[in-house]
Image 1 (cartoon, rainbow over the protein chains, first blue to last red):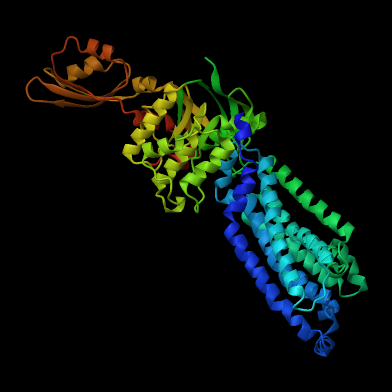
Image 2: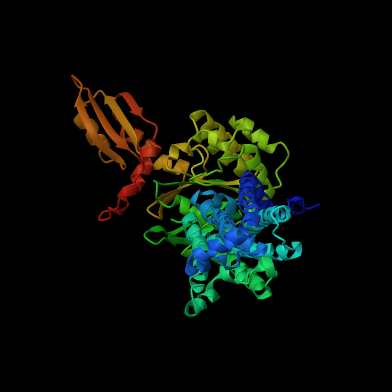
Length: 271
Length: 315
């Protein structure tokens, strides 16, 4: 056997996942708690009380919060979890992970030593992007299992297959904040650059969607909102939207490719 | 002899300063090469260029026969590197850290990590954040040495080590040289590497001001000379004054017909003895050359350029 053959498969991905498993488990528990807090409220809200509540709210607020479909189980799950807290929390994990992958590593002075060893810069970016994907995929699997477990007791009436498609599409949406953060760190060399880029994509997408909801003359903003691509078609009720799915997947891959390009061509560690 | 490192006209300009302004050196296989310079002279920059961590603005660099920019990861598995500003992960034991580096840069011979750790008196099962600066430096040394690379590039390797460990490190350098490994070391004090290095480059303000063996530096270094003779100091002074490399400091009359002379001397000892031939010498003290002082002199600023003063060595 050659020495190369004895070398472990994807050593950087493995290390990144092992280094963060505790915090990954904590985030899984947080996400499950949010699900357990919101979804069981649906039966008590689905009745006339909900209609009364909605009628009392200003139209603009309902549209901004995506509450217009809230009277159905799928609409409720999307509006309360996927469209709001679930999106924010998952995006926070993805952005934190993405910003740590290159930018924070370089800030801490660790990237220099890693690159002095037997790895390429391309490999560092790709393996850590894969670790980001796997971490988020694990959290999405937990969310999927959590929603399914609460589906019956909370009388949501969700279809397991449709929900799977919706969660897959949601994964690509929150991942986008993470790959943007990874790109920011790879290009700028600092964690703050990554966090800023990730927040811009996630919060910017959310804002463009909320503004686009306000009227026909603002609807063009939807075209620039990844949030709208992923959630605008009510995926929890209707399943996957293939053009949104491929668009999000392509943009994620573009961000990772740009991160490879950016890191390969610059000095590491600064002056 | 084959050169493991060849550097020609290496220059590196950062946004606001020129770190290297065109340096040349080569390091033959199996030798130990030291670079000495005050902080900010460009030592770290030169080393980072060799590892493709930063990219030169100009010049040619060859490491182990290849351009580090294009050589790929295989070449770095044949190099052990200790960064000057060593940063280590905090929540990880030394053993796991070494396992990880072995996974990407190995193979590492079984027991090699433990052997190095016990030699340096390092505990591998403590979390790195609980280690002192010296012990972190030992972890850095272990990860550089553990895969017995052909080339070791060590930036300020003795920084943070106590004198006992500095001696142990010199032993590791000796052993590595004995195995045919090539070493490139840096320090801001020549005393820390003079016993280890075959050749030394003095780097100042992005330029190499001198490359020499330690012996050559020693030979050119000024020594303190004190002579007591059974003659008046004027005679003594007159006899020695014409000697090349002699700088008279002080003369003293010591009672009847005796005198003393103090000088700095960087010339040949033979010439000195020759000049003293007709004089009745009562006492002669010629001190060991002070290498540190010799290097400090090489750091000295050329006229009209005070720019590098900020980068002068720490005491």
